[in-house]
Length: 85
Picture 1 (cartoon, rainbow, N blue to C red):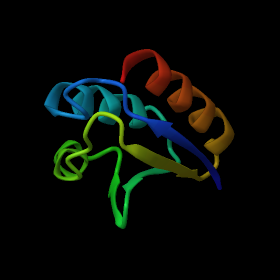
Picture 2: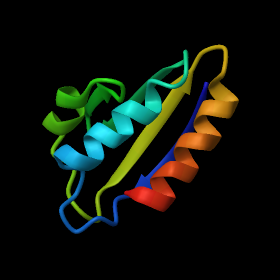
Picture 3: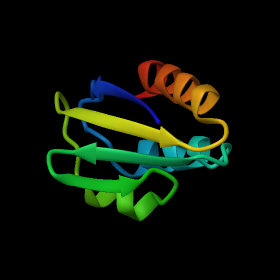
């Protein structure tokens, strides 16, 4: 399993648009991808589950990736978060 942490910079947090973009990006990989905030977590490939986390600007999240392409997926998703969210 690979994981990384990220502090959300977007002033609106992870709302519908970035959640949709993140879900689409995560679906490119066969590994399971989980996003966690505090004690809640969601499948990053499911738009509404990600939105229900209600991640706000400045909050720290954990992204965990597990599966056959976990190294590639974790690196790509971490880069994606830093560039887009």
